[in-house]
Length: 215
Image (cartoon, rainbow, N blue to C red; front, side, top):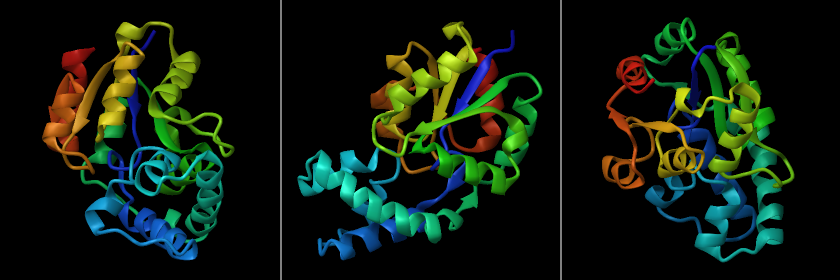
């Protein structure tokens, strides 16, 4: 059976910062909350939105869910289209898909992830797309990776997770699989090292070699 490579979406396949930050800004203004500095806004990219809202604004689960609906309305209409594919990603996916099963494991709601992958023309590379559900019952990277593994393989020794934030690396560790951190996304070297990434790469062209070293 082929080994499995799981990819994060935001910050790993695509630079989605413009659309996500615009959507978060719209939500905060609608709720009459202070819009933080750009570096704080960028910290929203990666973890579940409810987690960031709880941490920065003290929102409980119910308040965060209501805020998330405002965010999603704007994101679905505008933000979802404001992204760019990182250099080298298309070639990397084409190369890896010849030898490995590819899966997407993202904290973004699955319907949005599916739409993005389809619009980018990447759907042919992926055996499965796994993300959060729309009602907040399935969120957090560890939970989403677990769901992906349940559908794709039973051999955890033959799986690697690729992502740009500590959530990707820690989620991989919680599920007993290897991980690769990428430096071109929204995280940084210290974050990925502290999280315990097995390999760290500077650009997408280095991913296939790192995968081969681990699997």
